[in-house]
Each structure stands twice: as C-alpha cells, then as structure tokens.
Length: 330
Image 1 (cartoon, rainbow, N blue to C red):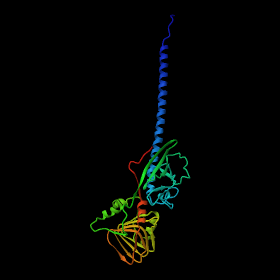
Image 2 (spheres, rainbow, N blue to C red):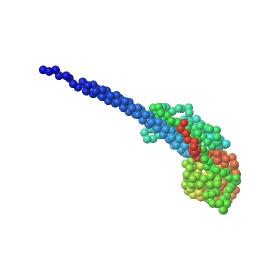
Image 3 (cartoon, helix red, strand yellow):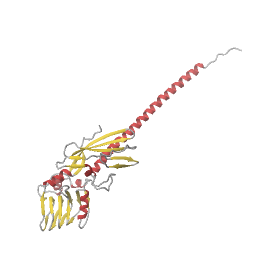
C-alpha cells in the first residue's frame, strides 16, 4: 500500500494564528469599551456635579429674594427669611455675609436641604448635591455666591456668580410729602423714584402683594413681619393704634388706590399711593410720602422727613440679580 503524506498542517497553523489575532482584537476592543464606559461614567458624574452647582446658584438666588421665613430644613415655618439669616447690610450698603453651609441633596426627584451655619459641615452625600457659600467682596451692593456641586462618588464642580442688590428705591424723595405735578404721567412719577415701571417693581419675588377690604392694619402688620416690601391692590385703610416699620427695618408700602389713616398710626419708612387722607389724631410718620393725587385730612398729621430711614431702605432692600459676565466655573 503506497505511503500517503498528511496534508492540512499549514491550514491548522494559519487558523490558530487567525484565532489568536481575533482574540487579541477582541481584547483590545473590550479594553476600549471599558475605557469608554469609564469615560461615560465620568462624564455623567461630572455633568451631575455641574448641574448640581448650577441648581445651587439658582436656588440660593431665589431664597435670597424670598420673604418667606424658613427653618433649618430651608422650608417655610421658621422665624427669619434666608436673607436675614445669612446676610447683614450696613448703612453704607456693604453686604456682610454670615457663615453659611446650606446643603442640598437630590433625593429621587426632589431636593432635601438644610440651612445651617459653617460650624456644622454637611455629611458626604451618596447622590448629587450642592453646598452654598456667600463671600464678601468688599464693595457696596455686591456679594459673591459660590456653589460647590458633587456627583458621587468623586466628581466635583464649582460655580460662582456676583449678585448685585437692585434697590427698590432708586431716588429718595427730598421732602416729607411729594405730590405729582399735573403734567407728569403717573408711570413716569413712579419710575423716577423707584427706577423701574410699576409692573416690573410689583413682579419682584421679594415684594408681597396684598388685597384686603376694611381695616387692613392686621394684614399689613403680619406682612411687615415677613418682609418690608408690601404692595396693596386697591384702597387701603389703616386704623390705629398701629405701628408699622422701625428705624432698623423701615417699611416700603405701595398702594394702587387711596391710603386712609384713622387714629394713631405710627409708620417708619416710605409709602406711595394714588391719594392719601387721614383722620386725626394721628401718630407719627417718619420717612416720606409719595402721592400721585390729593393729600388732605382732618386733624394734625405728624409727618417728618428722615433721610437716614430712606437711605437704609435704598441700601438695604431690593432684589438680588446676577451681574452680567460674572459667572465662572474655575
């Protein structure tokens, strides 16, 4: 029987080489896939941290402009609003922040927050979170808001912005009682003193808007305890004995209709109304009055112009707005 030579050895070798090459290709592809997965995870955590920091800036600005008293959980129910808890504004308009470590964590679809001081640092979060800080920059009317965002376990992002206090009173009246000239439009009279149109001024979150009938003294006093900027739709009757505002925290009252005072009404601050009348004996009025129409009454009316009260209103009250071009994340 003739000897037959075996064939196919070279084919086996080539096949093995191809299998090895395929395996190496799969290993490289798998390594690249794992790298892309890590990069994607890093991008997700980085985006979470960035968005958390941006949410912190928006949240902090909104709370600074809210007159709602809050508790340690940053929810309604406390005795002071966020601004009074964490900021002080001196007579020169310089904003001096108190220690702040407000911290919020995303719990599912809602934020769980705590408004504390710097003595109680927040615990490490296992979900996207942010921590806020307020920084004094030494210039009147400006404060820096800093938000540190976190995307667990290790992603961090910092964003900050300058906030300017836009005064609610652009030009303080030079006299105790200022009446609108007959030839001046009502909106121009308002904008001259408040620096903006009436509708814009009323739309500020920091302004409380009331609508009441009859004696509104109790409603205005309750609103005054929450915040010093109050707008009343329609006419307003204040009946004494009643005290509104103080030298430390003067009141700014805007009445779209007639303001009527009866009895001993003590007021510290500025009021603007379509008209005013009073029935004596009245209390003391310290600050100024802006009237679009008539001002008349019976009995004595103790009205004193107080530049210091008006300046405190101008420097210390208003809405915080972002300074254009001040945002940065480095």
